[in-house]
Image 1 (cartoon, one colour):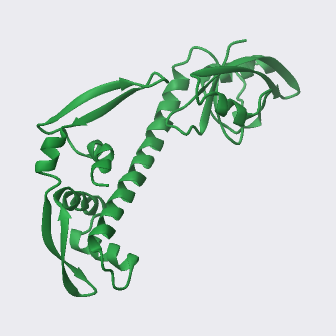
Image 2 (cartoon, rainbow, N blue to C red):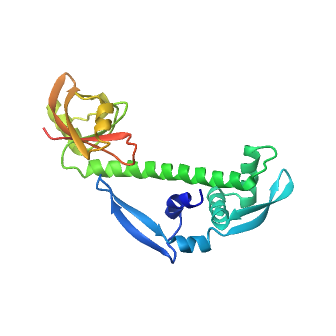
Image 3 (cartoon, rainbow, N blue to C red):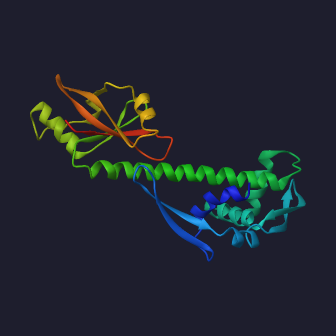
Length: 234
């Protein structure tokens, strides 16, 4: 369990001697920066057990825990604005009235916290990436979620809507647009598990006017995908 944590730990700690930076490009063309951990360096330092005393139900208890977990508990406590002793006390109180394996409880808490923070960070980065992806596209583009709801559109898409109503200065809200795809969204998501992009037909209805055409669909990382971006190609 200790070694599995380092894929998350490397995201929150600066590169130290014994660690190298590498860049991979995933199938969506997104650069992914990773820390390559020198396991021999980790084993001799961060994985060394360290004995400390904590308060459990107002009683002092000795806990033997790897150094990396004490460091991570320090980091989590600082981010939450509390003392580490107070954080540990609250963790133990939530788990059991008379916990026996305190070390396992603390390890589990650190693992869950890092995973939750990783997901939150990925979600924020995904939203920013989505906005940039749409605004930089030279074609009319939009983003929809699994519920087929428009979540983002770009300037070119709004200009297309104005062309449909015949007034390039009219203010139009994307909320009133009815966008229909001839392929179920779940099928599109399934296609994009093994493919970078796919295509389908669309129909836009706006103020009694209709436009039909074809779109190129890509999925937005991270996986599993929750958002699709469509580029109107015709």
